[in-house]
Image (cartoon, rainbow, N blue to C red; front, side):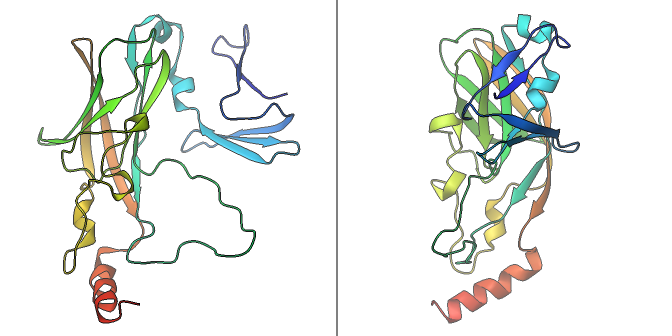
Length: 228
């Protein structure tokens, strides 16, 4: 009844019950490339979550006050741009949330921290490109950088940057290349500033999925000619 995890080689187990009903689980698969756990239940469908932090965690990490986990390479997904119809409008189509669209940053806190957890992202030249404020609860915390920020202070639940969802990020107007709002591909450094101590991890903005750069001018030109 549910999913259980062990970091002691099976000597002890804990239940993974976050956002999942108490149902029989008949199949488990860990995706070999992205470390997603795919859960097949009896009667309640499929559930997917990333277990990279659980694969990394051990007794030594649990003994630390703070630990910044390794960061998976980020794939920018350009969706619902230029008035595109990316949704089905049928009578009973099912829509379920996708994984966060951005760089997912996770860190472990042994105890709830006092003060702010600041997450700073810098590019390969050491220039700050985003600054987010993350949660400080005991356990594994998550912050998502939308990769569309241009130095704006992060805000909102989960520490998402202002660029997420188009609020506060630099948006493309008529005649402006919309891809300019996305952070360039390449190497970045993620720093977690907490309690006067800084923890760092290397990160990579690996690729972009969606419209190619060559297709953008034609899409903008078409939208200007026919606003409908």
